[in-house]
Image 1 (cartoon, rainbow, N blue to C red):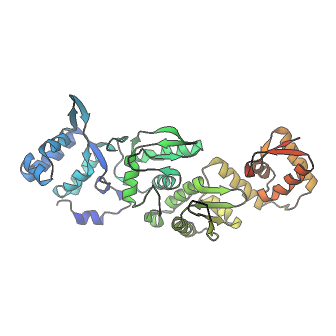
Image 2 (cartoon, one colour):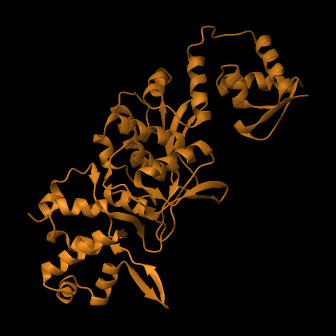
Image 3 (cartoon, rainbow, N blue to C red):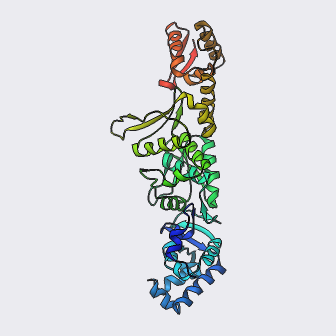
Length: 379
């Protein structure tokens, strides 16, 4: 039985095969498998010339696909097979042949792009896959004809991202500075596949992948953790925010779907930009948030732990002189930021600020910097 459109439609789309990929994808088949593939095409149509005519190609072009190389200025260059050509031939083969062919793909790429060597096909829904997707929605860039990158100042998040890329195969990866942030550069084939298969945009994203709402709990947790790692904050409150109300409405629904209550969406006007939409996790949900989502960002994880300890603190009010003595002892060891002092004393930013202001007015301490980045020191 030949592979047909009905089989494509009935395929469970938690797994994506070579024939599901974007037309921008090119792939290199191992020589022996490539020879069998093209011989079957020629046999189906009668000969190479008839095959080229039916597939709307020149005989020279189909020959370069078959050979796996082209020659320019007497130099051999690898010639990958385009996905759009492959899709035209699907009706010739049965599913078993195509799945075996998929196992013999040794590289994926886009035209003039970086390679994914020894790809792991098919690509299946997984926590790692959803983590990559949301990192690209939040802090990534995948504009047309440019190498995509994920930018974040946190080394551990970049390392996690690079590790997760291994689910695709041996991706060509590098790091470089993008503006003031370090970015992980990786093959565009990956973002083209994800964007096409999940029907989402990484440049000006406007929605989450619909599949995340029916995914496993582990996938939802990984998706939300990566989101909070990039776009979440935990100081006075635990908040996540993005400049798109549709995405934030979906994020709220996704968090609620795993049993965590949320506050209302808040709109913060930004001059000359899209309004920022934020969502707060109530204090009473912090422990559940930690258990179900949490942070892999080390500083945010530590801040959440301190916020939980602060919530559970038995002694809610403490002597003012005792608190200010503690502040002075900390500053004797080293100058500290407001958040560092608050965490050390199990305070919120709002809780510690009156003490710092009073001590500043009394000439006991000095400050430099700005806003929550103030650095405090003893006189």
